[in-house]
Length: 185
Image: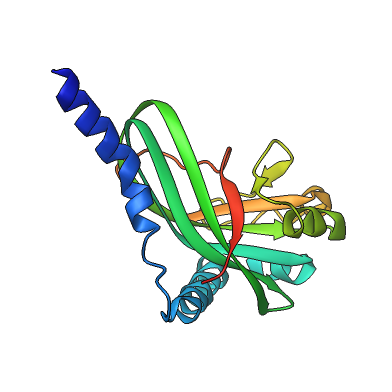
C-alpha cells in the first residue's frame, strides 16, 4: 500500500469522530435534541436494565451520553454529547471524546451513563477542566434477566458506569481514556 493511501486511510479513520462533532452550529436547537435523547436513554435504562432506577435515586448526579460513535482502523476515535442531570434536571452539557490505537477495525455506536455516587466525585467531575475515566470507575453489568449489581459495594463506589445499547462491528466498548468536557450546545 503506498504512503499516500495509508495517510488517506488513517486520516479518514481519525476524521470520522471529528466530523460528527461539527453539528453544533449557532442558533441550533442542540440542547433540546440532547435532552430528548437523554430522556430516551434514561427510559431505555429503566425498561431494560433492572436496578438502574435505584442507582439513579442514590446518585448525586448522572451523566448520560445517549450516543457515542466510534470508528477506527488501527487508529480511531469516538465522540458523543450528553447531559449531566442532578435530581432529574439538566445542569450542564458535555462532550465525550476518545482516541484509540492498536488492533481495531470497524465502527460502533453505544450509550453510557456515569453515576456519581458521592458529592466529592460529582464535584471533581463538574469543576475539572476536562475529566477522564480512570481506574476508580466501577462498571455495573446486568446479567441476563438478573438485577443490576446495586449492592453496597456499588453504592459506595465513587463513580459507577453502565455501557448499553451497543451496535456495530467493533467488539466491546470501554470508557477507559474517554475525556469529558463541558460544552455550550
